[in-house]
Image (cartoon, rainbow, N blue to C red; front, top):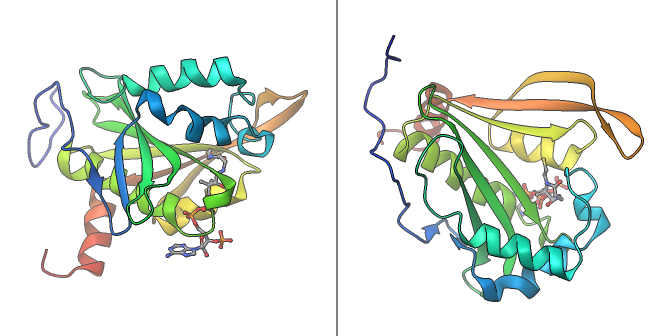
Length: 205
Ligand SMILES: CC(C)(COP(=O)(O)OP(=O)(O)OC[C@H]1O[C@@H](n2cnc3c(N)ncnc32)[C@H](O)[C@@H]1OP(=O)(O)O)[C@@H](O)C(=O)NCCC(=O)NCCS
C-alpha cells in the first residue's frame, strides 16, 4: 500500500544545492585536502569515546576522508551524505555531519555529527544538524528522522533536545563496547513536529 503523503518525494538521484548555508556555517562535500583538519579530531580518543569506531591513525583517516568525499548524492535507500562543516567567517573546518536516507519507501532518515573538541560549545553542531533536518523534511519530504547515541553521551543528548527531537527509546545493554555492556538511546522527530516547531519560530512561513 502506498504511504500517504502531502507531496511526492523528489526524484533520485538527489544532490543538495551545496553549500547548505546556515547563519554561521557552510556544509559542503568533504574534499581530499580536508585530511589534516579531519584527522585532527578523528585521531582523538575523547572524540571516538561514544562512536562505534576507534581513534584513526593517518592511513585510516585518509581512507575515511576518501570515502566521505564520495558521499554527496543520494541514489537509493541506504545512501548517505557526509558533509564538512565550515565556519564561514574563518574558513575553519570544525567537524562533519552525516545524513542517511534510511528508507525511501518509509520516508525515514538518520543524522549524525562529529566535531573537534576545540570547536564545541558554540552551538555549531546544533546549527549544522538543524540544516540536515530541514533537508530531510523540506527537500526530501521525509516522515521521520532519527538519531542514535550511546546512553552515556550526554552532550549528544542535549544537542538533540535543543533540536526539539523526542527521546523515543532506551535500549538497555544492547551493545558490548570496550569490554562493557552499554545502553543505546534513540531520538526522533516527525515531519509534523518539524512543521509545528518551524511555525512557532517563524509564524506565517
Ligand atoms: C556531540 C557533540 C557534537 C556536541 O557538541 P556541542 O558543541 O556540545 O554541541 P552544540 O553545537 O549543540 O553546542 C551546544 C553547546 O554550545 C553552547 N552554545 C554556545 N553558543 C551557542 C549558540 N549560539 N547556540 C547554541 N548553543 C550554544 C551551549 O550552551 C551548549 O553547551 P552545553 O551543552 O555545555 O550546555 C560533540 O560533543 C562531539 O562531537 N562529540 C564527539 C563525537 C560524538 O559523540 N558524536 C555524537 C555521536 S551520537
